[in-house]
Image 1 (cartoon, rainbow, N blue to C red):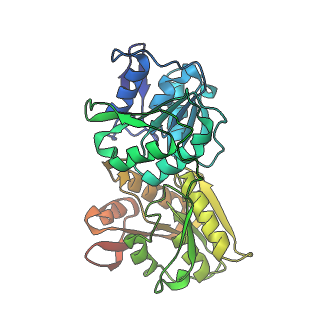
Image 2 (tube, one colour):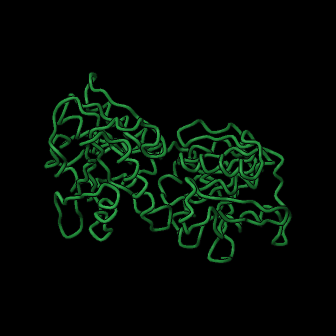
Image 3 (cartoon, rainbow, N blue to C red):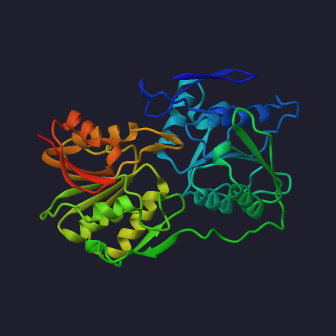
Length: 385
């Protein structure tokens, strides 16, 4: 946990789930820069926050917690960001109802007077969010984006310009930058181009030629990523009434493959991204048939599943948390899988060879074998003894 100090107060903030080994803070220089601008600490007039304030993409709830007195609406695609926001509100003595939590799948407010946008890693997610919010802004709406310099590109500014209105940027401070957009009736008000659908290539087993749905923000939304392609070629061949989990499901193509290969299985699709779970459900419903059974959960990994209730977990873990490279998410997923698996149950993982997941799996499960590998990827199997 670390303390963020503003001109008015200090706030104890942590990521979620809180991990004393986590070296990263729950905010960065981009959040600090935006908060200083709202306060008028840079010599400008403070921003009037008495109207409807919307905070988009608040990564760990730092912005929402500091602004809780103005009762903002937070819009995020991340379940963990929502949990972090509630935890940070609690540890700072704020009313948990002071911030209205909406997901990227929820209908946004009808009117926005101050729109604060933490620029996401995914340009597609930013595009979709701006399209959804554009009808709610008006000529007097204050629109400010923030991000680290490495996160803000010409394409980022063009999106604000096209969807909101005339756009300019601030000077860089501590490698962070602000984006200012002036809402214009002449700006584009076309609907979002998302979701995006494409047909899978041949040679992928049961999912060959199937159409997948990708909502904005999904990893590799416009094509099948090469790690998943490799995984699809080496999934276990099983039968019977297994309970299978596609953990970190993305668009759900791995879980769909397991369901098509074993119609007796019940597949649970889990991701912390609301957009991902929506993508997985649409992909599954369009391809698995009316009698196929499946569950779709937005949550913190396998935390909501009963212990010893799963036969097979399939996992392509992320190794980035926003811009930071970390194996913390993979470790959490592996530990959660061990708890959720029945004795004899298996965890199958695909990952970049250099990440060394076999070391973590041996530490957590006491065993790990390499099922398949190429110069870039490995597929690993660990069994709960």
